[in-house]
Image (spheres, rainbow, N blue to C red):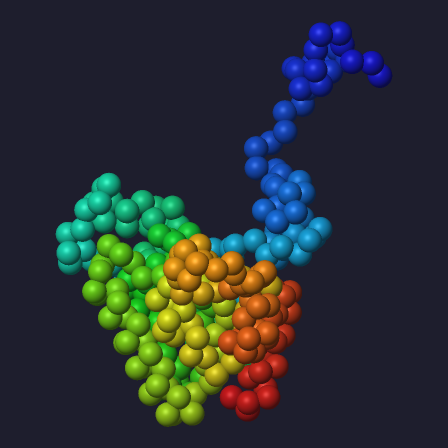
Length: 282
């Protein structure tokens, strides 16, 4: 087949035949290896690149579907919505940002909590949603996490928190920072009760979330190559004026340094969590 003179294969006709339109969103490019991937194949592979095993970020609804037994997730505090106690305005009012995030995600704030079963083991589950204002921790996120911890203690159930956050929510200032102490205190009480807390770190887990409940797990798991840290690597490099090691703040680097227990591929996460629960007798 020869190309029509003066025309490219991207023109409306190819060799005299109309070009078929490719449906929008059918393909996507891997952020890591730049391969063009069939979106449905990636979705069927738990949103992991089949070429390089890059783990795409997923929202809370997708994470819950992947992690829990079918139709076993029973949410609580779904209607808890953030207020604007400081009447914060930057480029636009905080209330408008909240409304836009709620419309985008379909949920009231950046974490979903509830009871569920993971391979038949009943747990209290909290899943943070990076698509809601960068998974930032405001007063509602802190309250829902603290309540989930308390429920795990009262019901004598394992607690699993899947973390994904850019840190504290600046629009709530001190109210956001208070959530670090509140969640840490709730976990200290849960620990005294003999509870089991499994923390799962996903890309990214940073800021005040890392500095509070995310790193207080009895066992800390992480997805491959997840970015985990407090301040960003660029800020650290500018502060210490030194080059950072290769892979700095990635899950594998933190495992080598003893900050996390295991790097677990997404396909093995359900089995890993259920095995931990069995091992601990919870």
